[in-house]
Image 1 (tube, helix red, strand yellow):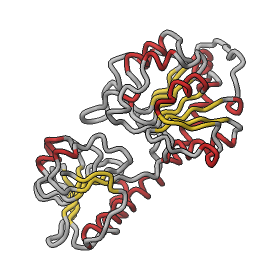
Image 2 (image 1 turned 90 degrees about the vertical axis):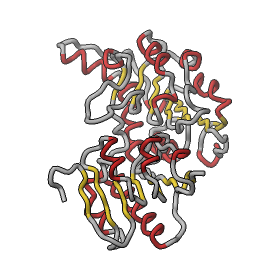
Image 3 (image 1 turned 135 degrees about the vertical axis):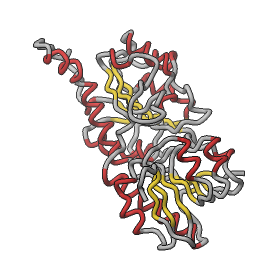
Length: 336
């Protein structure tokens, strides 16, 4: 039913009730519903406001969303599973969920993000943003002999699905790589890196790398991981690509470093502020848009048809297993 109702529901009476609050999955609705048990009730939120979501969760068993703050979690008294439609679960308040609620995630964004990283690295190192802006004004402004990607050292802050896939592509250009991770468990020899270490080795990575790729998840440990001191240790021609979470890099320090030429440029796909509804809103309190060597994208690096088609498959597989009383894949937390 769709009459003046922001919730689109495919209703049955005896199975699980699933609420889907992710706009990217809506275009895969037919595929998603066809993969679920016939008795499943699915509620698709056509409007993503919080009040609608809270109202839809009253008797829901499953919420598919990467956003589940405390007030939303409190409304889902029957929830058994919250399934993010991506890798990040920092928008899910696990502590506020009913005890025993499972939290799962999914990936499949690494191919798309790896392409974004390579494209951004070339664009920034070759000075293409400045050249484009200048020539639109009739000014022929060649870059000052930029280095090729094959001559660069790429430093990975985080080396999971995204970092390892991006490294496969960058290695084909002849780049060399180093990596730091939270666990410090990357095998540098197996991954064909110069070296790999833990976050304690971040300063060494920043001093060595020409391109820094941030894909580490946002945790208490990684919030503000890269601040003014760390940015100052990068070379003035080095570039930073953030596809992890905005607050991993200190907002004030990053703007100042870019404004003052402390670093050479940045590609920013993750931000500090997001629209609470709709598609309008500044991504930061600082005017990053006024800076000449900043590529700004709206958290879109991982978006592709294959990304969400495969994520839909993962999510529906887990819902089928939940209905059948079987174990689930990619469980990352359990509410206590």
